[in-house]
Structure formats: structure tokens, C-alpha cells
Amino acid sequence: MDSVVSQSLWYVAPERIEIRSEILDPLPKNNVQVRTLFSALSRGTESLVFKGLIPESEYSRMGAPFMGGKFPFPVKYGYSNVGRVELGPPELIGQLVFSLMPHQSIFQADANNILVIPREIPAQRAVLAANMETALNAVWDASPGPGDRIVIIGAGVLGCLIAYLCGHLPGAEVTLVDINPEREEVAKKLGVQFSSPELAPKDCDLVIHCSASAAGLSTAISSAGEEATILELSWYGSNKIDVSLGGAFHSRQLKLQSSQVGHISLSHRPRWSHRRRLATALAMLSDSRLDVLLTKPISFEALPSELPQIFSAQSSALCCLIQY
Image (cartoon, rainbow, N blue to C red; front, side):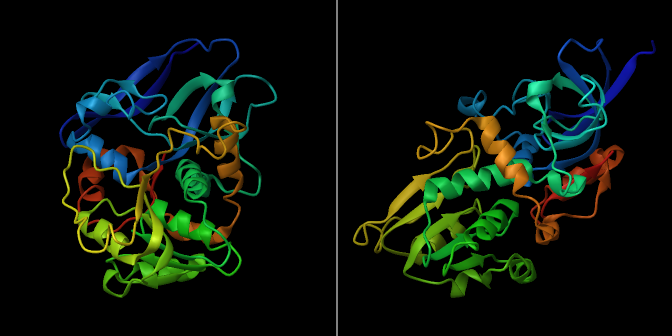
């Protein structure tokens, strides 16, 4: 039998990437071999990996589930992979599956580490599952309610998905805030309101911050109402930010709370596993309106030349699709 050669993306030094080849071992029992169709870049986390800004104290916590190598470099990173099973248990062969695998053309995994994608969800949209899982966990942490005035600061993929979920609450006033006016059209398609930071609503019942910027966090604080919660989802890596906790922060008794997908929200932890949460997030991608978050696919082979622009501050791309 001919050897199977897989190609994968590696971050090898600050702002240096390359595609490496590897020969796969014979398929172990109870494993599957998957040929990737699409994967997606996480511009927030992966840009920090790309620039070498993962703090040493967070090396173990920030490792992707099936990452290759070790931080800081070289690492094979990524966690949004959609492919088709070509070897494994008969009932899985030919199935379209999602996994938390890195950017890799062919991979092998334990069958328990893949999820069959529901038939009504297209392969391209299914790459949003990992982000939707983070959004779902954040909503659990934030506990928004019907009729609440809710503001989400930062209209990246995560902020948009949280706004989409909160927008389903009866009577809720949900506003997505971003410095990019082009995000207004995205907000409309997701069924929520849009605002620039200067006009962001005040006296909100809940504020969720996803912009990974000091200016965004300041906007979040100024939008929060009396004794409201500000849920912080941004991850800054080794970057340091200045934020003002003066003014009315103390007199309004605001609560600043972190949220991170590595932990199942306390409200659901006794009953939910990570697999159940991810499967639920995947099933929540049946709405075609979510396609507004997807970019035109770029080819896997083009990544070494395309990634510097994708990760630049000038890029306005949302979910960056990679096609294999």
C-alpha cells in the first residue's frame, strides 16, 4: 500500500510560516482518516501565535487540542476543520465531519474526536462550530434575559455569533458595536442593531466585550448600567492594555467577568461535557444568515503568502476560509 502524505501549516518563527509534509502511519484501530475540505483561521488567537505573542505562562492552557510542536515555535495550530472520512469504521466512511484539528490536508484521529455534521449544514458554514461553541459558552456565562438591553463590543466572528444568539431572546435590544461601519450590514443580516462606539447605547443590562482593544473595553465600561456585568472575552496574549477604572466604575458597582471556552460555564458544568457542547454548537449552524460571516475561500497552498495580510491590522475579514 502506498504511503499517505499529508501537508500541514506550521508557524515556525515570529511572522514566518511554512507548509510541511509528513507521512501518516497505518491507521490504528477505532481511528478515522479524514481528507480536509475546509478549515478556518481564528484571526484573534492565531494572529498571536503568528506573531509569537503567546505568554510563556499560558503555553499549556493555550495549546489547541491536537496541536503539533510546542510554543512558541514551531507549532502546527488551528481548531476548525471540516473534512470527509475516507478510512475507518464502515458507518463513518464518506461522512462529512467536524473536528478541532489543525490546518492539515489529511489527518488521522480517534473516532470519538470527530462529529458528524448534520445534513442541512453546508461544509463551509460548519467551520464556524468552534467559534459558535465559544459564543454559546459566553452566553451561558453572561446569562442574558428576555427584554434585556445588550451590547456586544467588537464585531468579529465571535462578537457576531454572540449577537446572533442574544438576538433570539424575546424583546431583547441587542446592539453590535464596531469601529468598521461595514459591519452594519452584517448586523442587519443577523437581525440585530448596529452602532459606532461613539453612539453606543448606555445603561445596558449586559455588555460583552470582544474587540481585544483598550478603546473597546473603555466603551464597554461606559455602556454598562448600574451594577451591570461586563463579560470580557478578548484575549490579549502578552500585549498590555491601559484601561480606566476611574469615573463611575466603582460608584456604579460594575462587575468585570472573564469567560474562556476551555471551561464549561459553571451553570452547565455538572451536566455538560465538552463534546456535548461542541455538538450543540454545530447543530446551531443551520441558519443560512450565518454565511455572511464567511470570506471567499483561499487555497491551502497560498497560505504562506496570504497570512501576513490576513493577520494585519488593516484586514477586515471575518471567518477566513481555507479550501483544500
